[in-house]
Length: 55
View 1 (cartoon, rainbow, N blue to C red):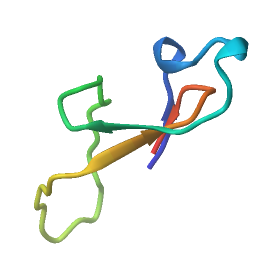
View 2: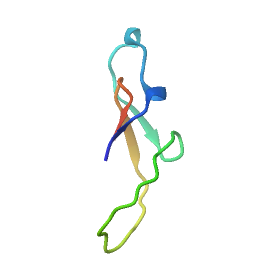
View 3: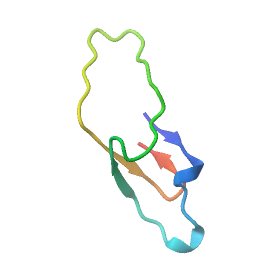
């Protein structure tokens, strides 16, 4: 899943690079997966590009 967060977008002068965040460092939209048989939560790292797109 991915989403765009304007607050995470960088200024054009900072140069393009991907930043990594851990769970709890940034806002994550609530997600509900339809048709899921089992839900399990794992630790993960989020990648955010200079445009504020998180994955």
